[in-house]
Length: 249
Image (cartoon, rainbow, N blue to C red; front, side, top):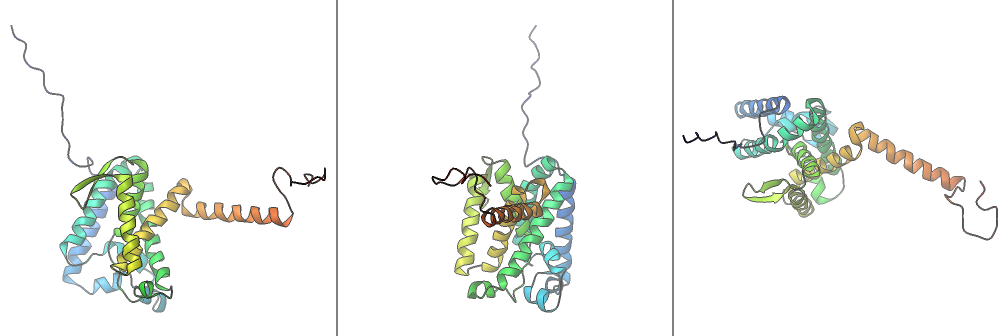
């Protein structure tokens, strides 16, 4: 009697897997505010990031709110939310919701603050951002992409949503594009924010789960110790010379 065939054990999945809590709510908030801003376009001015308004009129909420606002054309919100969905779910599942939200907030706000600082640099490219309106989640998303590349360097990501490229090379390419665009003044407003997101994410992850402040404290303490060594003429292993007591301090 012939045996009945066994059920196939091969399964196919699409995307990063089941939705995680923080990514779900970020999608809801971004898409919801995008729809509201279509009805009330003035919200983009109030809640986007305009360095001039932050510095001169003290719109201190803008470095936070700008990353939840998007341009009226659909491609801006669609592409950003696709990136959030593709890389955010796996990072949140690995880190946990609390650390994921903290990382997303710090990289997004940090990218905004770097954009404000860059707007004060007396160069034509950077000064152009002083009165410009910066909107979008790209600063935080570039931070997520850097983290994804560090944890999953060989995982393929579709470059321009067409060509599969290992994550480590993908981030190198988009970082180089952002740098060239900011240097040439072509799309420099967004490019500076993108570079800011990459920088803050790198420093934050280099500082470990202690965060960005831990990295700054480490750098400061290292600089202070080196200064004290020079002040008291302390050299590891002694100084070269013929005198026998040169190594005694």
